[in-house]
Amino acid sequence: MIQQVLISLRNMTVEVTTDGIVKVNNVVVTATIHPQNIGSGVILSLDSSGFPRTVVDVPGVVKVELTTPVGRLRRKGHMAIISVPDAYAGLLNALCGNFNGDSADDNNPCSGGPPADCFVNDGSCTTTETYP
Image 1: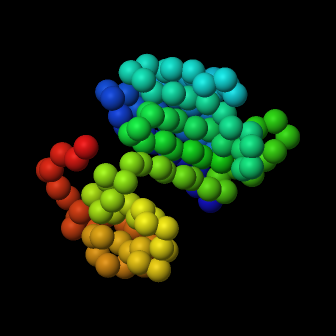
Image 2 (image 1 turned 90 degrees about the vertical axis):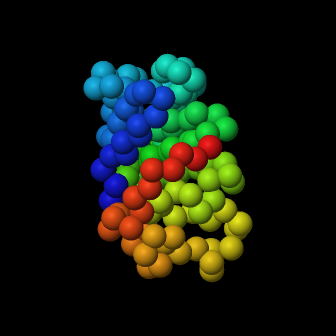
């Protein structure tokens, strides 16, 4: 089960825990169903549809969703979803993605392992390049 997601972007760190606690640069922020700008165009919200989740979104750049308790729905830590534009396909270093809808060709671009190994950084993913 996933316990937390740490997101570093636009000179801030956003921490989302499966208990629904959100911290922006170590300051607790309350996520609400109504989306709110928490700084630098980063949008925080709760989505209670389907699998209830806390959402951190930079429109057109990255969207991170973590299932958290919302109301009476309690499927915390069940799933994390990271969405990025297609321009990032093959450039995510140790993070798998299904950019073409064909899960049969998904693999770890770093070490060629199965998707279960995608989050293991064995050092082969180190890069100094900058992507969009």
